[in-house]
Length: 210
Length: 210
Image (cartoon, rainbow over all chains, first blue to last red; front, side):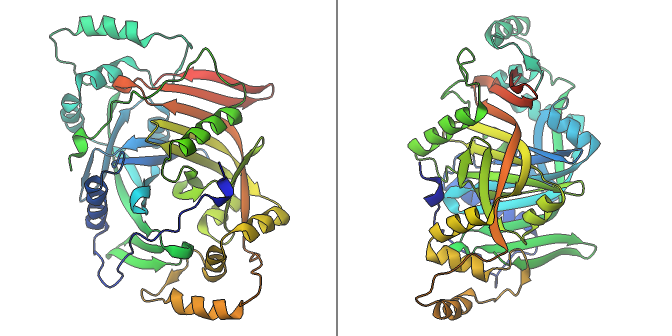
């Protein structure tokens, strides 16, 4: 592999600064839709960054809902990311669709959603994923030869013909954004960038230098 | 689009915990190589997270070199990311190759590399990218109708038949890792995770619960 010379001269699209959305969530939904339409791999995946003390950490998460207030994802509430959020709820989200040469960067505040909304989503998950949530003590150190399959069979037997209810330590967070940047790759690295910042008067827009 | 039901039941590969690398950089290079071999889109892209005060921010960056000490990328030294790093050099890197159902999460310290190494890389870049670096005052707010093309023609004339030297405010950072996690998607969300942590005695390995 040749890292030094691996780059794409982006040229698939551009941001039309003469015709931009007033609300960044509408703009986001348009791009997300495009990612689905174009069969991007894992179109709803994003990198979630949290901060513990002064150190960031980041991992891929799946977006499970968007509404006019924000972005919802689900996780184990005892996981490291949840622990970070519960002591510092500043988070960053990064959506990148390389096939479209598009990126959306979001900064906002995360907080737990209601138990009933988490219940609803949990009950919609495939049974296998529900078992996964019941089984895993997320991020705990385990033996190399830890055998999830045998644990899984025990639990499957236990829950035979029974509904699996949401574990109390599993649920959603909603991220309410205060900054959203749209990035469209352009030739010669002269990318188009449009920043929305939430002010008292509402969303303020600016174009940024690439 | 149906966010709630968009997920993949990962099953492409697994981590063989009976046969793991002692050094995480070697393991990383194996996976990066695989991403290149399999024609993943932008195989060397990663999400770089920095922290300003207590708030994370993240953006996609291209990896330009890896050696036994760390990971190198290039940027404008006046950009927000550089400003963040120069006041808090804790950073996180996230590589995600959805086609391989693989993710690598890195935490470490970033610092500027030598001017001569930056010079060498800058001189290897395509001329058009060099012009981009000379032109852009990264992340500065600009007019919607800012015309890069006319600026570009002026600069191209100015540099006709001349070598473009690296702008002093453009160069590389190296991230020296202290934690590296390898994540391989697995069925039922029971993913394989292997964490390397740098201790006085060297890299310590542990398996993590999914």
